[in-house]
Image 1 (cartoon, rainbow, N blue to C red):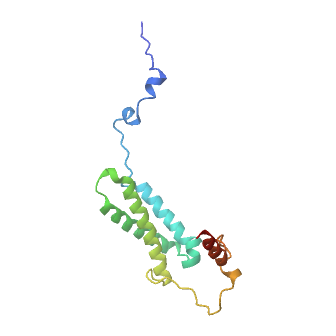
Image 2: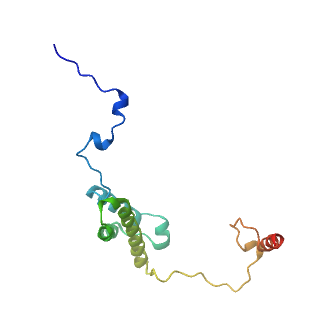
Image 3: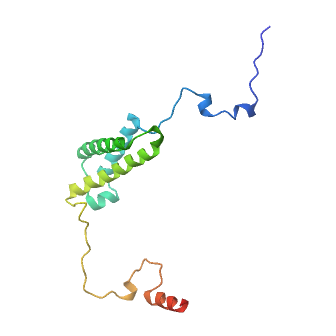
Length: 156
């Protein structure tokens, strides 16, 4: 007669970890797969060539130019993040370096393309007219200057 195998009770199987169930499978966040890097490049192309907050300030880039820029930005960021990699344990930190490098290089690219340098931020025009109290900061929730002074004087 054939013996029937019994499965382990539910409580026994729920205590095993994924690593115990699949000892030959490993998970690593760095380096990203080629598929992930392609997705990053595609997202960069979208960001550079589509209307966005970034394009309102610096203008959009043609799709062809965006493809070339995205390849260069991602590759440079990948190499820079790779220099920061010292152990497999630092995957999240390295991924953060990669992400920051991409953002920084993307901004540098659009600034350079628009003729604006990163070192020289635009300064608002100077107006010699005095600021009226109601125009001081219409979006602020802070009390007007006179109320601040009175409340500080009351506390002393």
